[in-house]
Length: 518
Image (cartoon, rainbow, N blue to C red):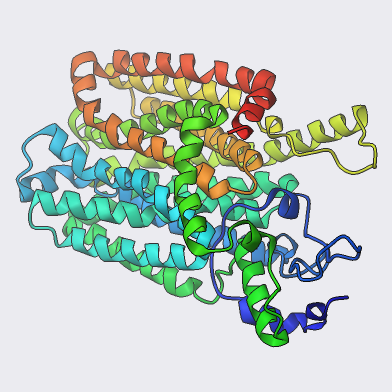
């Protein structure tokens, strides 16, 4: 036994337990379980790793309570920032009047530019979190979001508003860029369905709750208070997380452990496998910053998922940006009343999450047991993780999206009872949730070591769609009305979404192999 193994585990844990967030795990070390301390002659005694398969420092061995706390916190951070993306939707006419916005493009840009920040932020925030750890990146980004939300509330010109919203979006993107990696770090594959459901469901409520709150605030106070309320909410979350948000990124945890051991033992030769791969900061930082872009342009599996994921995300923001106008202009509701219709979106998200979560885990476990029974491994160990086990539920999600859009569009065009468009939009929202959960789970399983970077690449293109689609939505509905407008976008959703599950199921492993070669 090497001398660094004799150091008190408690002392090490005290030294490294700094509140934080997380990201992707290492393929061998975290997906297959904690690393074991070397007991054979072939292993370097200076290698710092997990002390045992049950090492409590490994996030996958944390108590369930701690796992859920971390998952809920990152979900709430994302909830707050996604609320910001739509909270001003009911107040856009008031904002346009106050700040002198004259065109539909300017008005829509003031709202959707926040999502554009989601396109830029992950490109450097996710890689930085794989260099410095999750705590510092998430918390600094949260503070940045709070500052620029306050600035948005004090904006005196449309240029100030658009610039401040963009900066706030960049800060708010940290939870989006890193959250999936946190889930990957803390939860084992067979447990990820429910944890991903929480991570996907809670934030998706943000765009639905935002207009409800924004409509109430703008009618009873000023639209500026929408930003101030968001800043207060996020600030409370940040303060509340200081003692409960623990670091979960394995390389960061082990590097801190090695640092403590080097100091306590005087052995400067101690190292972790991650430090050996990138011994100095500059190459490590360069590699991490390039990784999301490299994944996006060289990994076909990510390109396939991103194409449809971006389109469905863009549709979501078409709905969010134009939904209040339908109720105000066509159904003659007040601003606050129009916000109440977003409850149907929240209901759809809730149903989608509650159905997809348990079914995803059950299907995954069933397919894995079936594979183990038909093709047992030579040493009796469990079979490898197969991301394609997340695919079956993608098809129902891909079908619900166009079905919901068609019901919503034609009911709105015919000006039926208010329940008609709301039923359609609830079905659409349920499909969006199911699709998002399955796509995220597939990426997490496919990129266990670099989950944050892979999800960052995925989020970048989605965010460009979320920014761009609402800009042409008013003109589309003016030209085609809601019926034919939604028929058009629903048709494209079918062409992109329905073939994807079949392609992934039949050719996913082969495509992933090509991606791994780059």
